Length: 85
Image (cartoon, rainbow, N blue to C red; front, side, top):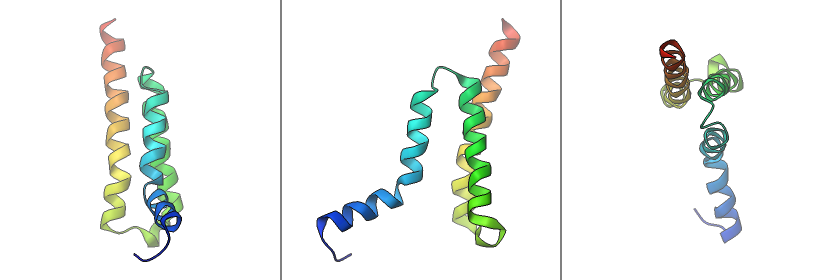
């Protein structure tokens, strides 16, 4: 890519915006598994509406499925811990 350093830095930031946002969410709610699971599932739903049914292709489904799986794992762990206590 040709451009100035700031243009390249801006492109890097735009392409990693979702990852940075997901890391911030996980960092904020790491100790609250129920809230982390709900927020990650909400992020997945927002991504489905953001991309729309016509814009979803193979790579997009993979990008949407990762926070869905992690959110379900957080909620599953929360339910298992709550059941044993």
